[in-house]
Length: 278
Image 1: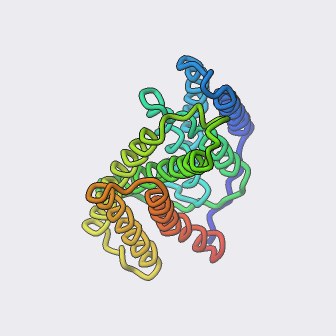
Image 2 (image 1 turned 90 degrees about the vertical axis):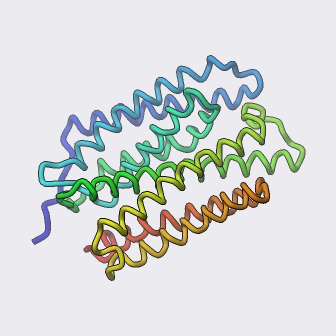
Image 3 (image 1 turned 135 degrees about the horizontal axis):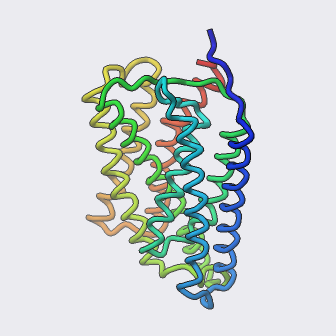
């Protein structure tokens, strides 16, 4: 028997609308800073960060309500997408308090808003997972943290690609003037990848140690793609350390690893839940 499809109540819809509005305002404030370019002051980013954090706080409440149920975790596809989008936004805004990465919010915050809207309005049946062990909880937490941080690294890589292209074409004007130097952008990228790689390594290790079905029929493709993604990031970090890889090579390897990782998890959930209906 299929689980009942849930529908949002009035309070959930109202909170969703308010969260999206906060994300929108924060994005507009960040776009204004980009438009000002070199004229933007260091203090002008604070209203955007505070507004974004307010949106993230409400988003977190809404995600918690739909995922953490008395019967277990509801890991339905759109709920997981919203969870990852929320975590990416949270990591970005927290990092922006001490690092010049706030401009990534121009891409991250609208995507988080979209993920939340889909979570709220799309009719779904629960995909419950009863968590009986601490090891299972730890594996899921590590996996989502790794995916979120490496997703943030992918956004950073795309922004770095735009910056690199403008500089190569000798058009450093516009919003490029508001970005940190290329070397700083690359350093931030590899900090994200390094931490994400550690979390991904722990996630895979915990999966092989504590899960009995990592290579079962419905998970083997997820496991294989995740391991290939791990190898891609390992090669990238090794190339950076031994040969000083940077620029386009670093961008391409980062995006390739991210695509593999997202295909491994979200791609498999998309096929199994929305297409095959399992």
